Amino acid sequence: MAEKLHRDDHHFKIIRSDIWRLLRQERKDMWLVVAYSVVIGLLSLVVPLGSQAIINLVALGVFTNSFFVLCIAIGLGLLAIGVLSVLKHYVTDVLQRRLFVHTAFEIGYRLPLIQRSA
Image 1 (spheres, rainbow, N blue to C red):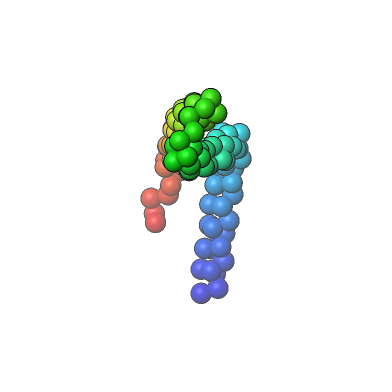
Image 2: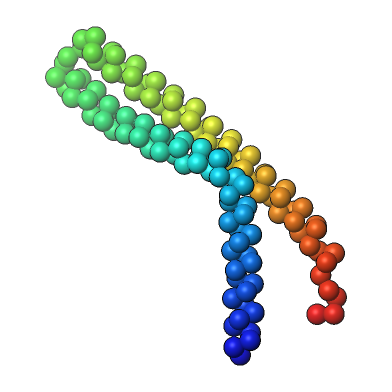
């Protein structure tokens, strides 16, 4: 029983080290996805805050230059959110492809090494 637990713990350590090795190789792209997500989250605050300000300005009947500047700023913020979302999805897709190819090559390397006596 203790031998089985030791063997399982050893396999878990091997798997954990392989996962960390994969993640270390893709560290740059993972931080890029995190950065895009943070910026998208911050820019997403533009929509409710800007919408509330526009509603207040319309309710008061104030149609000055600041109203139009606010509308343009919200539009540009939404455009930036869309562009950053597309970039985030592109980087995520490339990251997934690389991990899939790396995993496929790793399986292709290890599969012939499996002993058939098990």
